[in-house]
Amino acid sequence: MVIGVERIKLALVDHMIWIIILGVSIFFCYTIPNFLTFRNFLFTLYVVSPLGLLVFGEAVCLLGGNMDLSLSENAGFTAMIVGVILVDWVTWLPGWTGIILMPLVGAGLGAVNGFFVGKVKINPFLVTLSTFLIFNWMTYYLRRGAIVRMPGALLIPGGGRIGGIFIAIPILIGMAIFLYFILDHTRFGSHIRAIGGNSKAANMLGINVGNTHFWIFTIAGALAGGAGLLYTGYLKCIPSTIAEGDIFLAFAGAIIGGVSLQGGRGSAIGALGGVILMGIIDAGCTMTAMDPALRGVLNGLILLAAILINKTRASLRDRVLMPK
Amino acid sequence: MKLKKVKESKETPLVKMEDIHKWYGKVHALKGISLEVCPGEIVGLIGDNGAGKSTLIKILSGVLSKNRGKIYWKGEDVNISSVKEARKLGIETVYQDQAVIGCLSVAQNIFMGRQPVKPWGPVKVLDKGKMRREAEKLARDLKLHIPSPNQEIRFCSGGEIQGVAISRAMYFKASLVILDEPTTALAVSGVQKVLSFITRLKNEGMGSIFVTHNLHHVYSVADRFVVLSRGEKVTDVKKEETSVEGLIELQLRKGVTVT
Figure 1 (cartoon, each protein chain N blue to C red):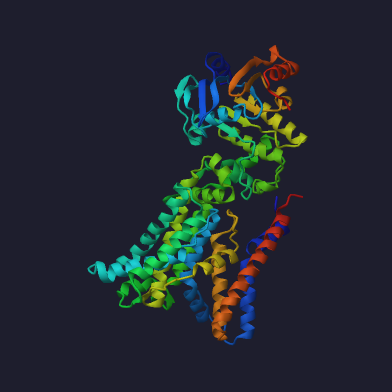
Figure 2: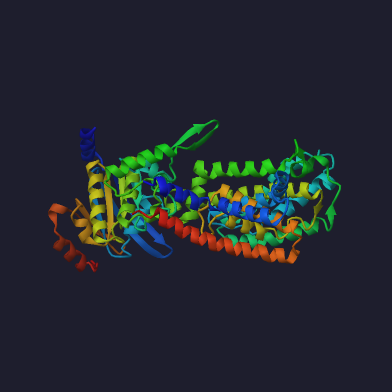
């Protein structure tokens, strides 16, 4: 039995991301005046929430032993499709329908990935690389420039506030809790982990691997659609460059949050930690007016550090868990 | 209950495979094989690599489909088209390459694919408490040396892992357990452990098919031996009517090597 000290050790190792967040916050508090205010923290969360949904999507894919390169382009393409529908094609549709359409269109685009990976059995890297290109350039094809006159209702989830708090923040946190519930407390979630951990064994245990892959990509797509909605509200318009290239940050966020590239390991709450850490560092850079190019470099360094930390974390965890 | 089982065994075999054929493209892998298993009986299915034993049991466990032939389950003509269906009938398979997910706990591994759930409002959530309790009970029952059901299974030894796989059959009350080379990848102590698990299944009244190319592993526990060679059945004898030497000689004569 894991008891007392062992249990505490395991908890520390498993939730290391929160300790790191605390450390980085304290560092910024001492180096940047006025860093730690409640408003500043809320704003930090708000800024990072569109990316957060992409991170969650990528985390679901990685847990199932997959990857999705197309998520950010899915978010952009989805936003553009819905924008064009509301503004050009079906102008009589009320703006709020876009709020429902975004996750649906995103899920549809994700299902395309899911179909090719789960049913046609093509390598997820190749499938999502193709759809990355398709989604990216379809966005430009639909509209070069930006849709600027958006119906107000569509901007509410990503830009509105209730009682002074941006609506995007409860969406971000609620989604993390929802995904935690799905992944850790339902049969479907356990199937995702099983497939990510050992898909051959999962198949022998009677789990429908192809179907599960299909749903993994569809869920990731729906999250990307949700991200598209938040980006739209954040930017107050839909430029053709929307969310472009953010997939790298989405991968980084998931990995910083402790989701393993080998599949099966990691949690939605950890991924939320990854998102928050990236947000805090981003806010710190903004407040010190750091060179944007250097910020890019810093992102790379953070990812590298995260990989090293997770490697050590995994072996520490093994040492704690190893039967004596 | 026990009495009924004995009676059953005299009336109908648990499973009866009749004239099973399988082609892989142009290769005729199974050339009309018949096989019977009775409740409480351990059948040793022996043969060299490529003899067709794996193909035969994969058909029975729902992984592969047959091209021709019939399968009778407790006297009824059945069509087993998936692992799920085989499990529904009561056929459980323990694989050589240990069908476990290393990063999940022992409890999760026992129940994977068939976890108990409890209602939580409108949705069904995993009953983790029940899984833990049942896993603990099973481990005690089989005398597995597992410190906790929450233990990630990659820390268990090969013998214990096979024990976990076999405990699936015990918990879900399988009638027939197929053991596909369960001892091949194990150390000597692991082999002994697995053999004791198998005897345990027999005592519970389950029929089992023990597939192996190592005659010595199966000889001590099996009641009957079926020898395959190049897709054909060579022998089907009771233990009383044969000996290790006899079986080896028989296999050698038919060009089957015994390792």
